[in-house]
Length: 136
Image (cartoon, rainbow, N blue to C red; front, side, top):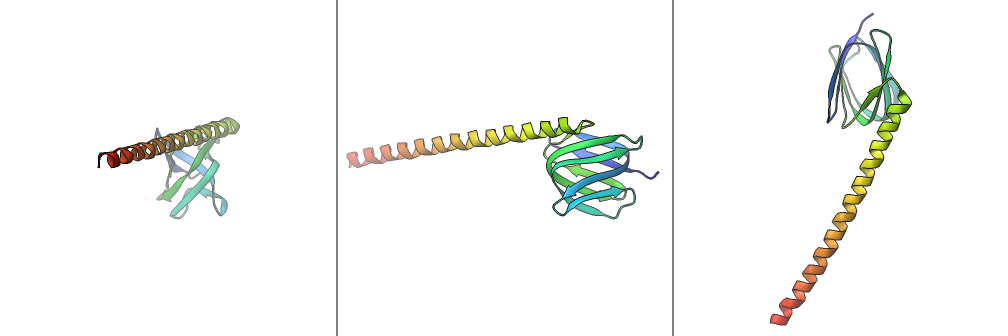
């Protein structure tokens, strides 16, 4: 059976798979599959699960918050900020959900801290402005 190479890249890791039979992913238009010999393709993958079958017939699940897929010359590259890979789809989906929840919490905390700093600066500028008028 014909195969293609797959490279998975994120901020933490790069993994190579030399012999992949097929890849199934989804973009905004819906699910699609890719096999060896597919035409050149670039797709923006949506949040969720994708999967691929290796040359031994084992399915691997890939959970990510979106990414970019590039297929050309029988090589596919999937690039994402973060991905989880495994054979237990529920487990890797839960890992992604937990990380996204933590990231949302971190963003909220950072936003709240910046708001506090902004208010403190405005108060301090007001205090300094009042003192300058007293000197005049």
